[in-house]
Image (cartoon, rainbow, N blue to C red; front, side):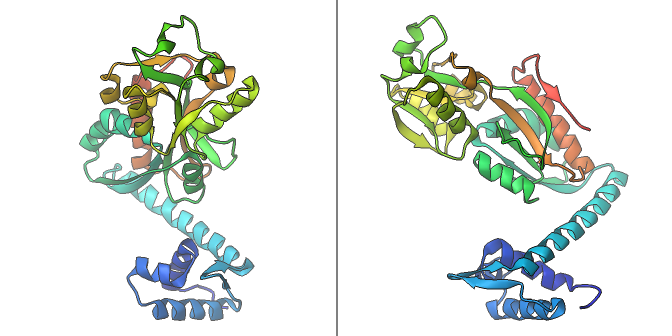
Amino acid sequence: MDEKLDARRTHYFMQVMSRGSVRGAAEVLDMDPSAVSRAIAALERDCGMALFERRGRGVVPTDAGHILARYVKRQQNIQESFFSEIDSLRKAERGHIDLVLGEGFVELMFDRVLPGYWRSHPEVTLDIDVARTSEIVQRIVDDRAYIGLVFQPPNDARLRTHYSRPEPIRAIVRQDHPLTRLDRPLLLTDLADYPGASMQEGFGVRQHIQAAEISEQVRLRNVLTTSSFKALWQFAAAGIGYALTPPIAVTADMRAQRLASLPLANPILNQGSLHVLSRAGRHISPAARELLDHIVRGIGAAAAPATDTVSYT
């Protein structure tokens, strides 16, 4: 086996692994599939073992393929650390950062974080992707995103929390809804007679609600499940029923539509928290560290409770 693997071939290999097929990788690489296949075959000769096996219409990595992928990622991390240190000499004036976040954080980012960040870092480029909790965690762990903003991620040693703060789930209703006349935190039984809206499976918000339903032995009548926080707000604003969501996810535009945020009595629904994440052990570039600073200040300015916790170590 050669002492040094061909970087071009390993790049093609990682694309095939990511896309699950030679054809899918070829589309991303803007290449002929046969050229990608030849490169993978040459890499397999270099390694002396098969790296993929066919599965349906695609391919999956063999044990040797998984080993090679881990090696390539380690090499990428070493290279990333090198360039991050070079960036520090350039005072973080350039760079690219991939972010992934829940839809409820989008307005917060553009309202309180990004304008100030780009004024001081005009040449830093960002890629922002919107996803559900499970997808955000996976992209952070797989190094497909640098920073993640998420409601109540799972307890995973591979994740590093830079900032967290309590964020209870509330019942969002129009101000003329009958539930607003109850002068106390709401029980789930109070909601049971009204149509509701909630996030789909895979969102931390939905998992909290399901746990609360089990604890109170109540099954809420969700007439709408969605992957869009905006759809929840519009459901409530239209007067159809209530929506269960953290208040931070309610935009200023929706608040202007005479919405009320009602507290809930169930302890589970008051134990949620929002988190700013990266992968544990991943080097934080100066540009990303300064973006983290802006995010923490932006979230903190959005009515942050006194129990916020922040960590940069």
